[in-house]
Amino acid sequence: MLLGARALRAAGLLRPPGAVPRTGVARRARCGPGQRPVGRGFALPAGPDLRHFLRAAAAGQPGPSPELPPEPGSAPGAPKVYLETYGCQMNVSDTEIAWAILQKNGYARTKELEEADVVLLVTCSVREKAEQAIWNRLQHLKALKARRPRARAPLRVGILGCMAERLKEEILHREKLVDVVAGPDAYRDLPRLLAVAESGQQAANVLLSLDETYADILPVQTSAGGTTAFVSIMRGCDNMCSYCIVPFTRGRERSRPIASILQEVRMLSDQGVKEVTLLGQNVNSFRDLSEVQFQSVAAPGLSRGFRTVYKAKAGGLRFSHLLDQVSRIDPEMRIRFTSPHPKDFPDEVLQLIQERHNICKQLHLPAQSGSTRILEAMRRGYTREAYLELVHHVRDSIPGVSLSSDFIAGFCGETEEDHLQTVSLLREVRYNIGFLFAYSMRQKTRAHHRLQDDVPADVKKRRLEQLIAAFREEAARANAALVGQAQLVLVEGPSKRSASELCGRNDGNIKVIFPDTELEDAAKCGAPGRAQPGDYVMVKVTSASSQTLRGVPLCRTTLSRAAASH
Image (tube, rainbow, N blue to C red; front, side, top):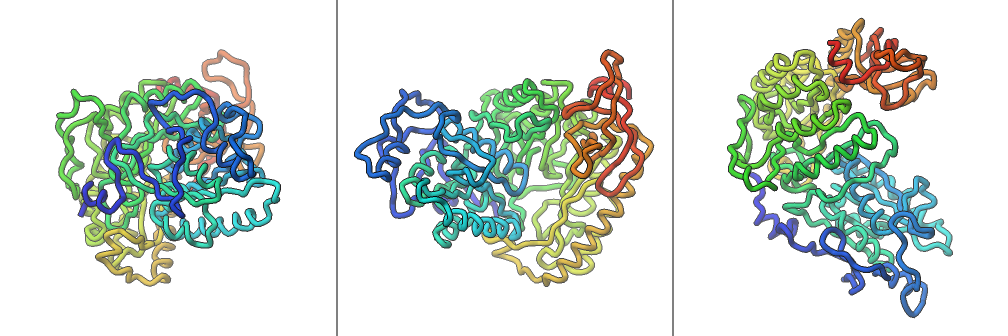
């Protein structure tokens, strides 16, 4: 059952729209009068802030440093922050948001762990293995803290994101290693939390929000000069699948205003980015409620045979409108989106993908299981038959579409027959890309409260191996069908295995490797030259595996020219 806002608020996990976040701080530390609000609506003159008072107190000085605060992100002596990202693309986006906030508050970025004054781990909680990676990393940071020279200020360590939201108390109390804990909706509070931590106290803010989207913060791209970028368009999820922790770590669905998304995409286009991926936990349920005149618009229908655990949501500008507007910004910029739910694919979205040359003909259709009985236990809202009908409809609507999916092996109550139905679905659909995992029980989920994790670990492992084997066999066949065809590839850079080869991805998001040689320009308007990251190259595929295509480059071209020639 979907948790209501009142229940979440009563549990202390949600703040109402516009409310000032309350912050839990170990040993009852509180923000002093020198704190400056982070975010909108304040323009204070430059002067000492809370960090300066805390630094002075720690050094035994009577008052604040006489120096004015440094210019954001550029002053000598600015505290250096080292960021590590774990998990999904949303965490990459969150890292860029957190860094944008810290940069505006006087922090400098370092790529060298030994140089850092602050280490922040942006974490994932979707599976136990992801969390264990963080605990292991913290042991390494414990040793780094211990050998830090006394002449330097103590190293501050922070846990951000979904694991912070799920395990706040354990993180703070386990070996007293972590100084700052901030949930996905608390990044604006990071400067204050770090200032409190600088005084030697632990600080945490893991309250979820009904309205936080960071719409007014333009993320700072963490890979300067990169050809691809992620743009977060909505946060949270209302689907409440029984296995999933996301609604409890990222909260209810809320979408950014379209205007702020378009502004960010235009900025990326101006920077030379050639591919943007629109991100959300349930990206195609996007619903912008910021414009009053659209708040009474009828809700679009679900995919045929699909249902939800919540009532239809009327009002707002929907994903099809956003996709239309984003794709018009730059005809030379590819547009992708992830992760969608299969229930939210109205015909207008499929038609738009088919019509626009710069919207990639690649869809992620997470199935999770091929057994209707298990899908019901997962609360996915569809049957095997409805899912297959959607797959056929998508392929009829978008010829040549590339499909990817998610699958879970060994969910609660899964029998051998259920497992074999999942294997048969993998073979019948023949996905190009797959993400397959053994089930990992998560606390707070419906499965944790209502179901038994009764499939033995060795059985999960065997079933996962069988799913992976079936996927690879079918993906190899699907990719082999591309041999002999010309594929438009966006160059990302040198191949990791050979400096004499380049690597990129085709429209279907499949990796393509080809020799780095002199190439003619398709328009015959430039001298021959080697392809650079961000260039489009037409490549004739000569061989294929389950994960990679190899080929010979034909020419450099553009996205528009390649589309016109087809």
